[in-house]
Each structure stands twice: as C-alpha cells, then as structure tokens.
Amino acid sequence: MSKVYDVIILGGGPAGLSAGLYAGRARLSTLMIEKLTEGGQIVTTNEIENYPGGMEHESGPSLIARMVEQCKKFGVETIKTTVTEVQLEGDIKTVTAGGNTYQAKTIMVATGANPRPIGCTGESDYIGQGVSFCATCDGAFFEDLDIYVVGGGDSAVEEALYLTRFGRKVTIIHRRDELRAAKYLQEQAFANDKIEFMWDSTVTEIGGDEVVQKMTVENLKTGEKTEIVASDEDGAFGIFVFVGLIPNSDIFQGKLDMENGYIITNENMETNIKGVFAIGDIRVKMLRQVVTAAADGAIAAIMADKYISGH
Ligand code: NAP
Image (cartoon, rainbow, N blue to C red; front, side, top):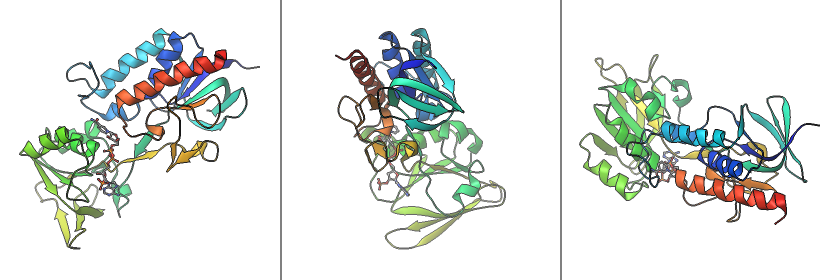
C-alpha cells in the first residue's frame, strides 16, 4: 500500500507554494506535483511592484526561489511530472502522474492558467521566431528593433513598459480605445516616449520568411487594414502577446464545478467535493495576483488541516 499524504498540491506557482508552506508548518505530510519548474506565470515577470513588503526590483524568479526554500524547510516533497488523471471522490483521493499513482486525504488544485494566443493566421508558425508570450525571456532579442505588444490588460502594459528597455519603439495594439490595465500602469505607459498605441485594432495575420517580418492589423471600427513590414535594415520585429489566460483545468472537467473553465470555490477555497480545494488563478475570482494566490494557499492549507482532523 503506497503512502497516503495529508495533502497533494497540484501546481507549484505562488498559490501552491503558499499552500505548501502553511501545510508544512502545520506538520501535514505534503507532496507538490509540478510539471515544469516552480513559479507558474510569475517567473516570466521581471519586476513585482505590488507584493506587500516585497524587495525593490524583486523579480518573479527571485521571489519564487525564496518560496521554494520555505517549502523545503518545512518538509514539502516535490516531484516534477505531469498529472494525467485524478480521482477526487471519497476519503482517499488518487492522482496519476508520470505513470505512478499518489494518494492523499486532500487535494489542492493550483494548476493556474496559460497565456491565450491571439488565434490569428500565422501566429503559431512564428512562436519563438518573433512571436512571444514572455517579455523577460525574449525581449533582449529585439534590441533596437520595433516591438508590438498585443492586449490592453495589466500584463500587456506592464510588459510593454519592460520592453522599452530593448525596443526602439513599443506599440501596444489593443482592440478597444481604452486600456483594461490598472491606472498606475496606464499612467506610466502614457508618459513613456517610447510607447505608442494602435487603438481599436487587432492582428489578423503574421508572416515572414524564417522570422516575423510582416503582419496585418485591422481597425475594428473602420475595417481598414494596415500592413506592417520590417525594413530591409531591421529584417524583423517582435510581437508579444498578452491577451489573457486559459485555465489549466481540463482534467477536472466533469468532476469539479466550473465557470468558463475556472473552478468554483467558496471563501474557504473548498470546491464541490469534500477535501478538494482550488487556489490561485485556476479558481473563479476577481483579482489574480501573487498576493491573492498566496492568501488562497494559506486559507486552503488551514482548511485542509481542519478537514483532516475533523474540527
Ligand atoms: P486580462 O486582464 O484578461 O486582459 C486581457 C487583455 O487582452 C484585455 O485588454 C483584452 O481586451 C485583450 N484581449 C482578450 N482577448 C483578445 C483577443 N482575442 N485579441 C486581442 N485582444 C484580446 O489578462 P492579463 O493582462 O494577462 O492579466 C491576467 C490577470 O493577471 C488579471 O487578473 C490581471 O489583473 C493579473 N495581472 C496583474 C498584474 C499586476 O498586478 N501587476 C500583472 C499582470 C497580470 P478587453 O480589454 O477589450 O477585454
């Protein structure tokens, strides 16, 4: 009979790591399963300005590295593999990952979300060849070139600001004439000489030889199409896509109650199945930030402890 953990955490982003810290400190035997490296989306962020008490110029990777150390300190075991199946009903839940089966009294779903593609012609052919979803990873490839950022939310504006370090000019292409991003980010973007805007616009086609060299942008109000072509001298430009997220919830479909692919919880992070919690970006919530993910993880760990001990 294999070990029955108190807690299995699926996903090692800020929510999962916070749950690990709190579960570990409560002396719950805890296993975290993460398919890549810990951190989730925040590792693609160069600077975190809004984590309370965070250090100045704190990057996503540096904050995550300290969270990982805290989990280790309190005995959280980690394996790096992909979860393929879950059985959530009953007192003992099972998780199949990497061909092995793991058992636990409680499960925390912290699988987060992935970047959403624009969905236009040619986009998928040029990923890594001029189309990117990560400014921190790929910004430096576009030193002194033109950079286009698609989207109007916090990610688009925050990353556009970061990309001004590299690009000659950064143009935000947004489908409306008003940004969704937080006001403090908007103020910084409007004040930045290197940032321009294409309002009411969407990218309909991306093309080029080996790398992105041209794209078509359509004005949604007038229907006018603009072809943007890299000069011979430049030979390329960059397109950074930040048009929202797709929740990683496929394996929970039909098992957990959801809304648009996000898992529904109550304020204690409890799902419709006893002993199963959802935390961080994967759950239905208003504000998706490191601070709210960390809070979710803490609450779920405390509730898991209460559930296991029957209090
Ligand atoms: P988001 O808030 O969902 O914004 C997505 C943006 O992309 C919106 O402006 C949306 O336009 C646009 N869009 C959506 N689908 C599109 C399409 N098919 N084509 C063109 N444009 C499209 O996503 P996000 O910016 O990635 O942020 C995700 C979550 O993380 C949010 O909760 C955000 O607050 C949070 N976040 C916080 C911070 C921070 O606190 N510093 C940083 C990054 C992210 P409309 O506006 O017209 O809908």
